[in-house]
Image 1 (tube, rainbow, N blue to C red):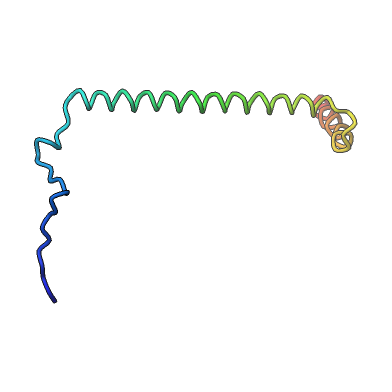
Image 2 (tube, rainbow, N blue to C red):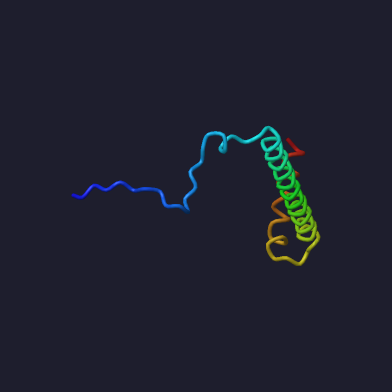
Length: 89
């Protein structure tokens, strides 16, 4: 096997330790950006959760008010019997 050493080309940048170290201001800026992103994400999640809850509540009310639904008509008498049995006990 031929072992050759790869020499960095002129286009490659070799970082020194002083170039890798970020300043305190850069760290604070990244921290602020991360907090802003987290807050935006929480706001979006809260928005969707709230709207999903509202939609579910609306569908529940509509289903409860629909007296023509075959499932509802079949289940209602069973519920009233169970409620009466609970009252009698």
